Length: 147
Image 1 (spheres, rainbow, N blue to C red):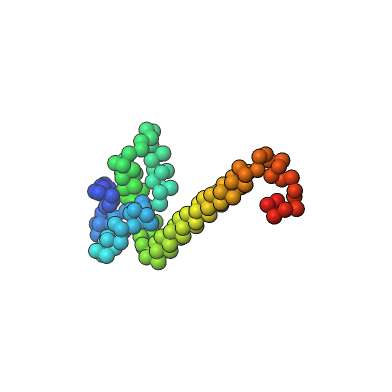
Image 2: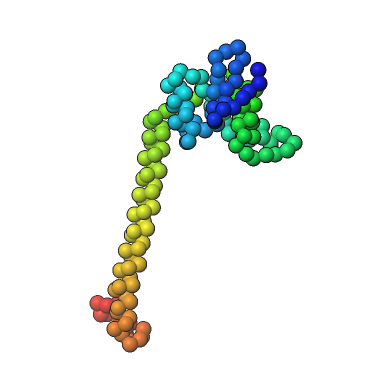
């Protein structure tokens, strides 16, 4: 039986129940994988390196959604017994979301700190230089508080 693709789920049957293959079970495809597993469907994870090799093994290299679906379906059909079952773990997804959020907060905090530093430097040193007539006059006595 030839593989076929419908809406991102790629099904193959060999006299067995239909098997769905997904290339991405950790990112955007996670929700589909969770849904299919909850519906008691057999879902296989297709490694993106395998679909890439399938795409590159053809004489004409194409890059489109339909061609990607065809390559994933071919990998699923050829390696059905070798591919691992999709097992979307909520704990890993949640940890990934928390790590991404933490990285965003750290980056934002560093940006705010740098903006505050720039603003304070401008306000303090900018006004001090304006009060002095010259750079040499501003630093003429290095033992003063301003120095």
